[in-house]
Length: 403
Image 1: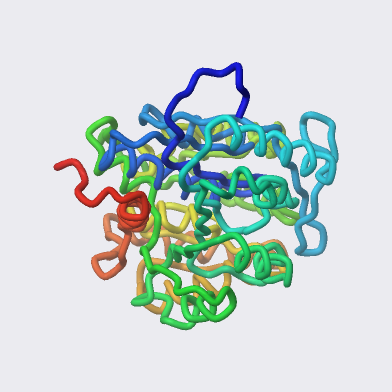
Image 2: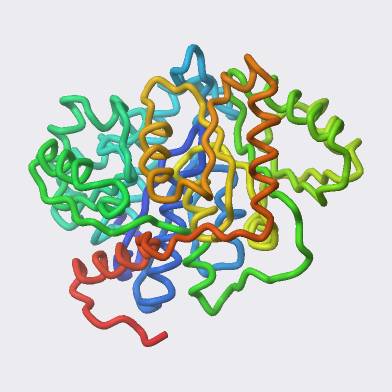
């Protein structure tokens, strides 16, 4: 600790979420942070991540965060790989820079507990300097949170990840629901890390926002469909070109379609939708959840965050799966569709690109859903609150504030 600084209390909880492609890691961490702030406002809490859209995910919630230089990735042949970030440093260089930055943050704030999302070492080993610093680890307890279907990701399945967990971590949280996914995923994590995985349920940012008094999702105009494309994969541009052509042919008789497109979606594609009177295009932002809640249906890509959003909103959805090598989306959606076959439609992005009639047919089925509701009464969407209670209990806090 810097001797020139005055003595101050350590931060109770530091949440770390790595970044690079999707929003799932950050969204889960935001939801858990907001749940802690709602239930245990006396606890000191800080979120650390590189995600540029973090503030949009937080909205007006009382959660503070520190921005690291961001990772960037691209997908080649179904496999994600790091590329130069917006700071013009490569992913290996950013791993080293972020590692030292995080170590300094840890030394300054001296967290009692660190909850890392998904990877014991971080995306590019940026947690190693802090994990291996004996001064930090004398007073810090490390916990790891894992999504419902992990997939074959080397940062979580390698010998290094397992060894680091066994050496430095003392708890494991599973953000899944065994009633939907079965017990095998949770048991596999327990076996892999030799630590019992605490089942929390699905972590839903939308549910946490609706459960909080600080922010409410407003109900307003009704839209026919909310379409979310947070990032572009190998086939996404072609997929969107087909979708624009289909919506142009169908005309505006179905109602308004609202698009939320990631920053890497080309200007020409945005304009192809904006030219249609029944389509409105937005950047991803805090109004996404409000629009989703006020839509009859949704079209999403099949990441954890997007799936949990539509479940929390109760919206029938067409879920587009990317052909990623880890097959996480396919495994996860298969389990969900088995439970909700009439409200969740699945389609492979590459199949639509190969045959445009597939997308046209699936869209017709989705729009026919009308005012049907996605029944999630048997899905545990309280993962953020359950994780917050587990963290508070680990800190010796038993009773949350009455809400």
